[in-house]
Image (cartoon, rainbow, N blue to C red; front, top):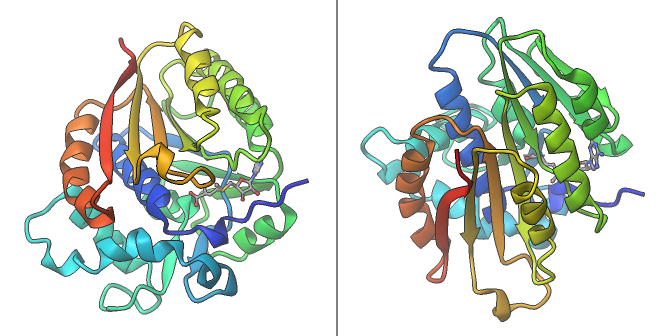
Length: 285
Ligand code: SAM
């Protein structure tokens, strides 16, 4: 039984971390001409109005993306963060001239709006209500929406017909076993597509279950697993809530770390005095 709905959390600090990393990875991949199959195993709704009753209930975007949005116009030189905020402005109803942040785009939007004619994107969403929302989004023709299990779909979809593959695995971790399930799905995906660039998001929660995922991957024999973590307050300060966000990138594009570190140096002070960002190889080359 699925109960998680991302609409309650859209635009929070974890989305900033996840979508900025995704944006940077796609940027690097688009530097080459050869076509790419993108797979988003846990798509969600695709676009989140911030005035919806769900978003208004917790207002997590106010402590996340909204803090960046407020300084967007002060960013002068071209930068990853500036480009990301410009893309966010384009997602607003009425386009880039809008001053108010009205919607926050989910991963389907961040991927679909950068597709080139030869690229493909498959979006999986298992929750019937969330899939219904996703099916109403206007997306390009080379986007396929599947109402079904994204991990099974990933295994079925690889190897792909395009020379390159990029996968986002962004589960809700509602089941304790999901951390281990994700490690196994990732291993089987890498067996089918050795050169795929795969991003996996995980939450930092007081229970520390993300270590199960990290440990399983460290022992898996997979190489080139890069990790970044954004911690908004020390773990001990709130025993219930998510205190940070983690991203793994298998086969990270060259130069990714430098670009993200530079952007995160601007992001972390905006997200709070205690906010810290760190990155490096979890498993090296
Ligand atoms: N990736 C989205 C984004 O960045 O905007 C957010 C995804 S949200 C964290 C996780 C989503 O996965 C939920 O909408 C949930 O219904 C869906 N889900 C859970 N288990 C799934 C599965 N096995 N296959 C596909 N979708 C699943």
